[in-house]
Amino acid sequence: MKILRTISRMYVEDLSASVTHYEQLLQESVRHRFRDPQTNLEYAWFHNMVLVAGPQDVVNACRNISVTFIVDSIIDFKYHLKDNGVRILREPYRIPIGLTMLAEQPGGSIVEYVEVQKEGTLTGHADWGEWVNKLRDPVRIMRKIKRLTKQMILDKPGVNPAPASSTHPSLQSATPSTTVAATVSVPKPMQPAQSTRLPGSNGEHLLQERFGTTHRALSFYNKQMLDHLNEVMKSFIADQEMMFIATADAHGECDCSFRAGPPGFVHVLDEKTLIYPEYRGNGVMASLGNILENPHIGIIFIDFFRHAIGLHINGKAEIIENDELTKLDHLPEQIMEELNQEGFRKPERWVMVEVEEAYIHCSKHIPLLKKLDKDIEWGTDDVARKGGDFFKAKNCPRPWIEEPAISSKAETN
Image (cartoon, rainbow, N blue to C red; front, side):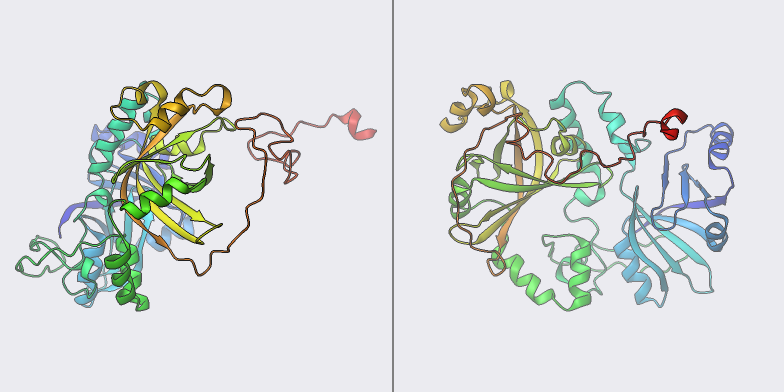
Protein backbone atom coordinates (compact mmCIF):
# COMPACT_ATOMS: atom_id res chain seq x y z
CA MET A 1 0.00 0.00 0.00
CA LYS A 2 1.73 3.17 -1.20
CA ILE A 3 1.15 6.75 -2.14
CA LEU A 4 3.04 6.83 -5.42
CA ARG A 5 2.84 10.52 -6.23
CA THR A 6 1.34 13.77 -4.97
CA ILE A 7 -0.45 15.87 -7.60
CA SER A 8 -1.19 19.56 -7.17
CA ARG A 9 -4.54 20.78 -8.50
CA MET A 10 -5.16 23.98 -10.49
CA TYR A 11 -8.62 25.19 -11.42
CA VAL A 12 -8.90 26.95 -14.78
CA GLU A 13 -11.65 28.42 -16.98
CA ASP A 14 -10.34 27.49 -20.44
CA LEU A 15 -8.83 24.01 -20.34
CA SER A 16 -7.50 23.96 -23.92
CA ALA A 17 -5.74 27.29 -23.56
CA SER A 18 -4.31 26.25 -20.19
CA VAL A 19 -3.04 22.93 -21.57
CA THR A 20 -1.20 24.77 -24.37
CA HIS A 21 0.32 27.19 -21.85
CA TYR A 22 1.50 24.55 -19.40
CA GLU A 23 2.83 22.20 -22.08
CA GLN A 24 5.15 25.03 -23.15
CA LEU A 25 5.94 26.08 -19.58
CA LEU A 26 6.61 22.57 -18.25
CA GLN A 27 8.18 21.26 -21.46
CA GLU A 28 6.02 18.14 -21.34
CA SER A 29 2.90 16.92 -23.11
CA VAL A 30 -0.35 16.38 -21.26
CA ARG A 31 -0.55 12.72 -20.16
CA HIS A 32 -4.30 12.24 -19.82
CA ARG A 33 -7.22 14.40 -20.80
CA PHE A 34 -10.78 13.29 -20.08
CA ARG A 35 -14.20 14.19 -18.70
CA ASP A 36 -15.42 12.72 -15.42
CA PRO A 37 -18.91 11.41 -16.29
CA GLN A 38 -20.11 11.71 -12.68
CA THR A 39 -19.07 15.30 -11.92
CA ASN A 40 -18.94 16.62 -15.52
CA LEU A 41 -15.52 18.11 -14.80
CA GLU A 42 -12.75 18.04 -17.40
CA TYR A 43 -9.22 17.06 -16.40
CA ALA A 44 -5.81 17.45 -18.03
CA TRP A 45 -3.05 15.53 -16.26
CA PHE A 46 0.64 16.34 -16.28
CA HIS A 47 3.24 14.43 -14.26
CA ASN A 48 2.83 16.40 -11.02
CA MET A 49 -0.12 18.68 -11.77
CA VAL A 50 -3.72 18.35 -12.88
CA LEU A 51 -5.80 21.11 -14.49
CA VAL A 52 -9.51 21.08 -13.66
CA ALA A 53 -12.26 22.89 -15.58
CA GLY A 54 -16.04 22.71 -15.86
CA PRO A 55 -19.29 24.38 -14.84
CA GLN A 56 -18.53 27.16 -12.39
CA ASP A 57 -20.79 25.85 -9.63
CA VAL A 58 -19.21 22.38 -9.83
CA VAL A 59 -15.68 23.82 -9.89
CA ASN A 60 -16.41 26.01 -6.86
CA ALA A 61 -17.69 22.97 -4.94
CA CYS A 62 -14.41 21.16 -5.65
CA ARG A 63 -11.99 23.95 -4.74
CA ASN A 64 -11.74 22.60 -1.19
CA ILE A 65 -10.01 19.46 -2.50
CA SER A 66 -6.49 20.29 -1.48
CA VAL A 67 -4.42 17.63 -3.26
CA THR A 68 -4.60 14.42 -5.28
CA PHE A 69 -2.73 11.30 -4.15
CA ILE A 70 -1.85 8.72 -6.78
CA VAL A 71 -2.02 5.38 -4.97
CA ASP A 72 -1.36 1.77 -5.86
CA SER A 73 -4.76 0.53 -4.62
CA ILE A 74 -7.95 2.45 -3.94
CA ILE A 75 -9.42 -0.55 -2.13
CA ASP A 76 -6.43 -0.80 0.24
CA PHE A 77 -6.64 2.88 1.12
CA LYS A 78 -10.41 2.88 1.50
CA TYR A 79 -10.25 0.15 4.14
CA HIS A 80 -7.22 1.66 5.85
CA LEU A 81 -8.75 5.15 6.01
CA LYS A 82 -12.08 3.89 7.34
CA ASP A 83 -10.29 1.80 9.96
CA ASN A 84 -8.52 4.96 11.11
CA GLY A 85 -11.64 7.10 11.39
CA VAL A 86 -11.33 8.95 8.09
CA ARG A 87 -14.67 9.81 6.47
CA ILE A 88 -15.12 8.64 2.88
CA LEU A 89 -16.99 11.46 1.14
CA ARG A 90 -17.25 9.77 -2.24
CA GLU A 91 -17.00 6.01 -2.66
CA PRO A 92 -14.60 4.66 -5.30
CA TYR A 93 -15.93 4.83 -8.84
CA ARG A 94 -14.44 4.48 -12.31
CA ILE A 95 -13.04 7.32 -14.40
CA PRO A 96 -11.39 6.96 -17.83
CA ILE A 97 -7.90 6.46 -16.36
CA GLY A 98 -8.77 4.23 -13.40
CA LEU A 99 -10.55 4.70 -10.05
CA THR A 100 -11.11 7.75 -7.86
CA MET A 101 -12.28 8.35 -4.28
CA LEU A 102 -12.72 11.40 -2.04
CA ALA A 103 -11.89 11.42 1.69
CA GLU A 104 -11.91 13.99 4.51
CA GLN A 105 -8.64 13.76 6.42
CA PRO A 106 -8.23 14.46 10.16
CA GLY A 107 -8.26 18.24 10.52
CA GLY A 108 -10.81 18.74 7.76
CA SER A 109 -8.64 18.72 4.62
CA ILE A 110 -10.19 16.90 1.65
CA VAL A 111 -8.02 14.67 -0.49
CA GLU A 112 -8.73 12.91 -3.76
CA TYR A 113 -7.27 9.40 -4.14
CA VAL A 114 -6.70 8.06 -7.65
CA GLU A 115 -5.60 4.60 -8.72
CA VAL A 116 -4.28 5.01 -12.25
CA GLN A 117 -4.83 1.92 -14.36
CA LYS A 118 -3.64 3.23 -17.72
CA GLU A 119 -0.21 4.52 -16.76
CA GLY A 120 3.18 3.55 -18.15
CA THR A 121 3.13 2.35 -21.74
CA LEU A 122 -0.48 3.42 -22.16
CA THR A 123 0.15 7.00 -21.00
CA GLY A 124 -1.00 9.49 -23.58
CA HIS A 125 -3.13 6.97 -25.47
CA ALA A 126 -6.53 8.19 -24.38
CA ASP A 127 -7.97 6.60 -27.53
CA TRP A 128 -6.76 3.06 -28.18
CA GLY A 129 -8.62 3.12 -31.51
CA GLU A 130 -6.33 5.87 -32.79
CA TRP A 131 -3.29 3.97 -31.50
CA VAL A 132 -4.45 0.69 -33.05
CA ASN A 133 -4.89 2.37 -36.45
CA LYS A 134 -1.15 3.06 -36.49
CA LEU A 135 -0.43 -0.66 -36.57
CA ARG A 136 -0.85 -2.86 -39.63
CA ASP A 137 -0.72 -6.51 -38.72
CA PRO A 138 -3.72 -7.77 -36.65
CA VAL A 139 -1.59 -10.50 -35.06
CA ARG A 140 1.00 -7.95 -33.94
CA ILE A 141 -1.83 -5.77 -32.62
CA MET A 142 -3.21 -8.58 -30.49
CA ARG A 143 0.19 -9.54 -29.14
CA LYS A 144 0.92 -5.91 -28.28
CA ILE A 145 -2.47 -5.48 -26.59
CA LYS A 146 -1.86 -8.63 -24.56
CA ARG A 147 1.48 -7.29 -23.32
CA LEU A 148 -0.04 -3.91 -22.48
CA THR A 149 -3.04 -5.49 -20.79
CA LYS A 150 -0.76 -7.46 -18.49
CA GLN A 151 0.69 -4.14 -17.32
CA MET A 152 -2.71 -2.80 -16.33
CA ILE A 153 -3.35 -3.17 -12.63
CA LEU A 154 -6.66 -4.99 -12.80
CA ASP A 155 -5.16 -7.74 -14.99
CA LYS A 156 -2.42 -8.72 -12.56
CA PRO A 157 -3.45 -11.57 -10.28
CA GLY A 158 -2.64 -10.94 -6.66
CA VAL A 159 -2.67 -7.16 -7.08
CA ASN A 160 -4.97 -4.82 -5.17
CA PRO A 161 -5.59 -6.93 -2.07
CA ALA A 162 -7.41 -5.04 0.66
CA PRO A 163 -6.08 -4.72 4.20
CA ALA A 164 -6.17 -7.65 6.58
CA SER A 165 -8.94 -5.93 8.53
CA SER A 166 -11.34 -6.98 5.79
CA THR A 167 -13.28 -10.15 6.56
CA HIS A 168 -13.47 -11.27 2.95
CA PRO A 169 -10.78 -13.92 2.21
CA SER A 170 -9.89 -12.54 -1.20
CA LEU A 171 -9.41 -9.05 0.26
CA GLN A 172 -6.94 -10.09 2.95
CA SER A 173 -3.35 -9.00 2.41
CA ALA A 174 -0.94 -11.66 1.18
CA THR A 175 2.13 -9.43 1.42
CA PRO A 176 3.56 -7.06 4.05
CA SER A 177 2.31 -3.50 4.03
CA THR A 178 4.82 -0.77 3.29
CA THR A 179 5.34 2.34 5.37
CA VAL A 180 5.31 5.53 3.29
CA ALA A 181 5.85 9.17 4.05
CA ALA A 182 2.43 10.72 3.57
CA THR A 183 -0.30 12.56 5.42
CA VAL A 184 -2.00 9.30 6.36
CA SER A 185 -0.62 6.84 8.87
CA VAL A 186 0.13 3.36 7.49
CA PRO A 187 0.14 0.21 9.66
CA LYS A 188 3.43 -1.39 10.62
CA PRO A 189 4.61 -4.24 8.38
CA MET A 190 2.75 -7.45 9.13
CA GLN A 191 3.75 -11.05 8.61
CA PRO A 192 2.88 -12.49 5.18
CA ALA A 193 -0.40 -14.38 5.20
CA GLN A 194 -1.32 -17.31 3.03
CA SER A 195 -2.64 -16.04 -0.30
CA THR A 196 -6.42 -16.41 -0.61
CA ARG A 197 -6.84 -14.72 -3.96
CA LEU A 198 -10.23 -15.75 -5.31
CA PRO A 199 -11.94 -15.32 -8.67
CA GLY A 200 -13.94 -12.17 -9.30
CA SER A 201 -13.39 -8.46 -8.95
CA ASN A 202 -12.70 -6.38 -5.87
CA GLY A 203 -16.10 -4.80 -6.47
CA GLU A 204 -18.03 -8.06 -6.20
CA HIS A 205 -16.07 -9.05 -3.10
CA LEU A 206 -16.88 -5.72 -1.44
CA LEU A 207 -20.58 -6.10 -2.22
CA GLN A 208 -20.55 -9.65 -0.90
CA GLU A 209 -19.41 -8.22 2.41
CA ARG A 210 -21.86 -5.33 2.31
CA PHE A 211 -24.89 -7.50 1.55
CA GLY A 212 -23.88 -10.50 3.65
CA THR A 213 -23.43 -13.01 0.80
CA THR A 214 -19.76 -13.87 1.35
CA HIS A 215 -20.50 -17.38 2.60
CA ARG A 216 -22.67 -18.20 -0.41
CA ALA A 217 -20.15 -16.67 -2.81
CA LEU A 218 -17.25 -18.66 -1.34
CA SER A 219 -19.27 -21.85 -1.66
CA PHE A 220 -19.88 -21.06 -5.33
CA TYR A 221 -16.22 -20.20 -6.04
CA ASN A 222 -14.99 -23.35 -4.31
CA LYS A 223 -17.54 -25.79 -5.71
CA GLN A 224 -18.68 -24.50 -9.11
CA MET A 225 -15.98 -22.29 -10.62
CA LEU A 226 -12.92 -23.56 -12.51
CA ASP A 227 -10.05 -21.91 -14.35
CA HIS A 228 -10.33 -24.49 -17.15
CA LEU A 229 -12.85 -26.67 -18.95
CA ASN A 230 -13.45 -30.11 -17.48
CA GLU A 231 -14.66 -33.06 -19.55
CA VAL A 232 -18.36 -32.44 -18.84
CA MET A 233 -18.02 -28.80 -19.94
CA LYS A 234 -16.23 -29.87 -23.13
CA SER A 235 -19.01 -32.31 -23.94
CA PHE A 236 -21.66 -29.66 -23.23
CA ILE A 237 -20.00 -27.16 -25.60
CA ALA A 238 -19.78 -29.80 -28.34
CA ASP A 239 -23.61 -30.04 -28.37
CA GLN A 240 -24.36 -26.31 -28.47
CA GLU A 241 -25.68 -24.44 -31.51
CA MET A 242 -25.61 -20.92 -30.08
CA MET A 243 -24.02 -18.63 -27.52
CA PHE A 244 -24.02 -15.01 -26.38
CA ILE A 245 -20.80 -13.02 -26.22
CA ALA A 246 -20.03 -9.82 -24.32
CA THR A 247 -17.15 -7.50 -25.23
CA ALA A 248 -16.10 -3.93 -24.46
CA ASP A 249 -13.86 -1.41 -26.18
CA ALA A 250 -10.88 0.32 -24.59
CA HIS A 251 -13.18 2.84 -22.89
CA GLY A 252 -15.42 0.17 -21.36
CA GLU A 253 -18.33 0.74 -23.78
CA CYS A 254 -20.05 -2.66 -23.86
CA ASP A 255 -21.69 -4.76 -26.53
CA CYS A 256 -23.56 -8.06 -26.27
CA SER A 257 -24.00 -10.20 -29.37
CA PHE A 258 -25.30 -13.57 -30.53
CA ARG A 259 -23.39 -16.33 -32.32
CA ALA A 260 -24.82 -19.50 -33.83
CA GLY A 261 -23.80 -22.40 -36.01
CA PRO A 262 -24.22 -26.13 -36.43
CA PRO A 263 -23.93 -28.24 -33.25
CA GLY A 264 -20.36 -28.04 -32.02
CA PHE A 265 -19.52 -24.90 -34.02
CA VAL A 266 -17.46 -23.82 -31.00
CA HIS A 267 -14.43 -26.11 -30.85
CA VAL A 268 -12.53 -26.96 -27.67
CA LEU A 269 -8.82 -27.26 -28.51
CA ASP A 270 -7.77 -28.10 -24.96
CA GLU A 271 -8.88 -27.42 -21.40
CA LYS A 272 -7.71 -23.78 -21.60
CA THR A 273 -8.53 -22.93 -25.21
CA LEU A 274 -11.60 -22.79 -27.41
CA ILE A 275 -12.16 -21.32 -30.86
CA TYR A 276 -15.26 -20.27 -32.77
CA PRO A 277 -15.90 -19.14 -36.37
CA GLU A 278 -16.96 -15.68 -37.47
CA TYR A 279 -19.38 -16.01 -40.40
CA ARG A 280 -20.40 -13.24 -42.79
CA GLY A 281 -22.54 -10.66 -40.95
CA ASN A 282 -23.67 -7.05 -41.32
CA GLY A 283 -20.12 -5.77 -41.70
CA VAL A 284 -20.18 -3.62 -38.55
CA MET A 285 -17.55 -5.77 -36.76
CA ALA A 286 -18.67 -4.50 -33.34
CA SER A 287 -17.49 -7.53 -31.35
CA LEU A 288 -14.24 -7.98 -33.28
CA GLY A 289 -13.54 -4.26 -33.07
CA ASN A 290 -13.89 -4.41 -29.30
CA ILE A 291 -11.63 -7.46 -29.11
CA LEU A 292 -9.03 -5.58 -31.15
CA GLU A 293 -8.94 -2.88 -28.48
CA ASN A 294 -9.68 -4.96 -25.39
CA PRO A 295 -9.24 -8.76 -25.41
CA HIS A 296 -11.57 -9.49 -22.47
CA ILE A 297 -14.61 -11.55 -23.45
CA GLY A 298 -17.56 -13.07 -21.62
CA ILE A 299 -19.42 -16.02 -23.17
CA ILE A 300 -22.56 -17.80 -22.05
CA PHE A 301 -23.96 -20.98 -23.56
CA ILE A 302 -27.58 -21.73 -22.66
CA ASP A 303 -29.19 -25.09 -23.37
CA PHE A 304 -32.89 -24.20 -23.68
CA PHE A 305 -33.97 -27.52 -25.16
CA ARG A 306 -32.70 -30.41 -22.99
CA HIS A 307 -31.23 -29.48 -19.62
CA ALA A 308 -32.22 -25.79 -19.19
CA ILE A 309 -28.72 -25.03 -17.91
CA GLY A 310 -26.02 -22.52 -18.79
CA LEU A 311 -22.22 -22.36 -18.92
CA HIS A 312 -20.26 -19.13 -18.43
CA ILE A 313 -16.77 -18.77 -19.87
CA ASN A 314 -14.65 -15.66 -19.31
CA GLY A 315 -11.23 -15.11 -20.78
CA LYS A 316 -9.05 -13.34 -23.33
CA ALA A 317 -9.84 -13.40 -27.06
CA GLU A 318 -7.66 -13.16 -30.14
CA ILE A 319 -8.66 -12.77 -33.79
CA ILE A 320 -7.24 -15.48 -36.05
CA GLU A 321 -7.41 -15.30 -39.87
CA ASN A 322 -8.06 -18.46 -41.88
CA ASP A 323 -4.54 -18.65 -43.33
CA GLU A 324 -3.04 -18.29 -39.86
CA LEU A 325 -5.26 -21.05 -38.51
CA THR A 326 -4.10 -23.55 -41.12
CA LYS A 327 -0.55 -23.15 -39.83
CA LEU A 328 -1.48 -24.48 -36.38
CA ASP A 329 -0.70 -28.10 -35.56
CA HIS A 330 -3.26 -30.75 -34.62
CA LEU A 331 -6.37 -28.89 -35.75
CA PRO A 332 -9.61 -30.85 -35.26
CA GLU A 333 -10.94 -32.42 -38.44
CA GLN A 334 -14.18 -30.43 -38.12
CA ILE A 335 -12.26 -27.15 -38.36
CA MET A 336 -10.49 -28.30 -41.52
CA GLU A 337 -13.88 -29.24 -42.99
CA GLU A 338 -15.21 -25.76 -42.26
CA LEU A 339 -12.17 -24.14 -43.84
CA ASN A 340 -12.89 -26.13 -47.00
CA GLN A 341 -16.50 -24.96 -47.21
CA GLU A 342 -17.62 -22.85 -50.17
CA GLY A 343 -19.64 -19.64 -50.15
CA PHE A 344 -21.07 -18.07 -47.03
CA ARG A 345 -20.79 -21.32 -45.03
CA LYS A 346 -17.03 -20.78 -44.93
CA PRO A 347 -15.92 -18.76 -41.86
CA GLU A 348 -14.37 -15.40 -42.69
CA ARG A 349 -12.08 -15.63 -39.66
CA TRP A 350 -11.97 -17.11 -36.13
CA VAL A 351 -11.81 -16.02 -32.51
CA MET A 352 -9.59 -17.99 -30.15
CA VAL A 353 -10.35 -17.69 -26.43
CA GLU A 354 -8.00 -18.41 -23.54
CA VAL A 355 -10.23 -19.68 -20.73
CA GLU A 356 -9.78 -17.96 -17.35
CA GLU A 357 -13.09 -18.78 -15.66
CA ALA A 358 -15.73 -21.44 -16.35
CA TYR A 359 -18.83 -21.92 -14.22
CA ILE A 360 -22.48 -22.94 -14.24
CA HIS A 361 -25.51 -20.72 -14.78
CA CYS A 362 -28.18 -22.39 -12.69
CA SER A 363 -31.36 -23.67 -14.29
CA LYS A 364 -34.00 -22.22 -11.97
CA HIS A 365 -34.91 -19.26 -14.24
CA ILE A 366 -34.05 -20.76 -17.63
CA PRO A 367 -37.18 -21.73 -19.59
CA LEU A 368 -37.36 -25.13 -21.23
CA LEU A 369 -38.22 -24.51 -24.88
CA LYS A 370 -39.21 -26.60 -27.85
CA LYS A 371 -37.04 -26.32 -30.93
CA LEU A 372 -38.81 -25.82 -34.25
CA ASP A 373 -37.45 -26.35 -37.75
CA LYS A 374 -36.16 -23.33 -39.63
CA ASP A 375 -34.34 -23.04 -42.94
CA ILE A 376 -31.16 -21.00 -42.41
CA GLU A 377 -29.31 -19.30 -45.23
CA TRP A 378 -25.90 -18.65 -43.73
CA GLY A 379 -24.47 -15.23 -44.58
CA THR A 380 -27.40 -14.20 -46.80
CA ASP A 381 -27.91 -10.55 -47.78
CA ASP A 382 -31.61 -11.11 -48.48
CA VAL A 383 -33.38 -8.39 -46.50
CA ALA A 384 -36.51 -10.43 -45.88
CA ARG A 385 -34.52 -13.48 -44.69
CA LYS A 386 -32.60 -11.22 -42.31
CA GLY A 387 -35.79 -9.88 -40.71
CA GLY A 388 -36.22 -6.72 -42.75
CA ASP A 389 -36.96 -3.52 -40.85
CA PHE A 390 -38.65 -5.41 -38.00
CA PHE A 391 -38.21 -2.62 -35.43
CA LYS A 392 -39.21 0.14 -37.90
CA ALA A 393 -35.89 1.90 -37.35
CA LYS A 394 -35.04 2.71 -40.97
CA ASN A 395 -36.64 6.15 -41.05
CA CYS A 396 -35.97 7.17 -37.45
CA PRO A 397 -33.67 10.18 -36.84
CA ARG A 398 -30.05 9.52 -35.89
CA PRO A 399 -27.67 12.01 -34.25
CA TRP A 400 -24.81 11.03 -36.57
CA ILE A 401 -26.85 11.81 -39.72
CA GLU A 402 -27.57 15.47 -40.45
CA GLU A 403 -31.16 16.00 -41.49
CA PRO A 404 -31.49 17.60 -44.95
CA ALA A 405 -32.48 21.25 -44.88
CA ILE A 406 -36.05 22.03 -46.01
CA SER A 407 -36.14 24.61 -48.77
CA SER A 408 -38.40 27.62 -48.49
CA LYS A 409 -40.28 26.47 -51.61
CA ALA A 410 -41.05 23.12 -50.01
CA GLU A 411 -42.25 24.88 -46.88
CA THR A 412 -44.86 26.86 -48.83
CA ASN A 413 -46.27 23.78 -50.58
